[in-house]
Amino acid sequence: MLAMVLRRRGYSVFDATSGAEALEALAAHRQEIRLLVTDIVMPRLNGIELAVEVQRQAPEIKALFVSGYALRNLASQGFAVERIGAFLEKPFTPDVLAARVQELLAPLVP
Image (cartoon, rainbow, N blue to C red; front, top):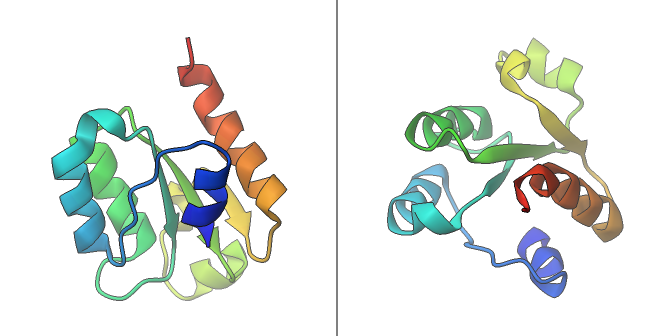
């Protein structure tokens, strides 16, 4: 759903169904990736862990976290929410997503 919304807004999107797959996309397309949009709650490698690894490899890539859980609930479940910068709590509209992505990428546009 997120990929479809962003593609319709003119963004190039690499889909990944897992953290491992996202890291493979990063390895193959690092120069093209400017923003990671990830859910926080995922099996094996959660979104926060994924973002830490992405930013270790490519510090210029920003991250937008999404979740159906409030940050306080995630913190109580042991997630490192102090590492979260940009965050959208589900549900949100396509317009809200697009505005947040544009806001995060705007400083990168010459």
